[in-house]
Image (cartoon, rainbow, N blue to C red):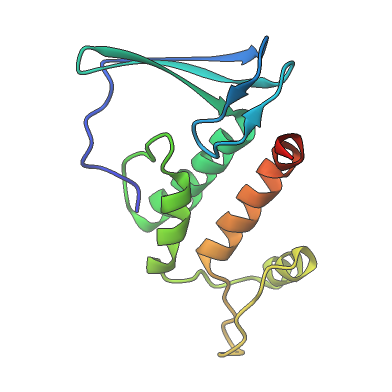
Length: 146
């Protein structure tokens, strides 16, 4: 669930930059290749500076999970950098959303399993959707790591 019990950083300075050397994404741990646009975050927390680098795609998935899932369920907070994987694993605690006909077609076309146990209200788990989105976002970097 989106964290709400952590203190915010005193300074949070975010820039989109182009990598001049290879870095490691703080979210998915995959490489950020030279020439790749990514987030560089400078953070001051409890008197210590830290620089965090993250794929733009990983940040987008974290924002998707926070806005479309956590906030839709009434939770407020944020997902700590490096915590997206755990957040996705914990999404099975949320009840599954009801799907429209278009949602069902889109999920099935993407290979996301739809639960038809109650044919009047087919559902898909948030965990499956978020995992699929994150796999899609990190796929190009999986190849670079190989």
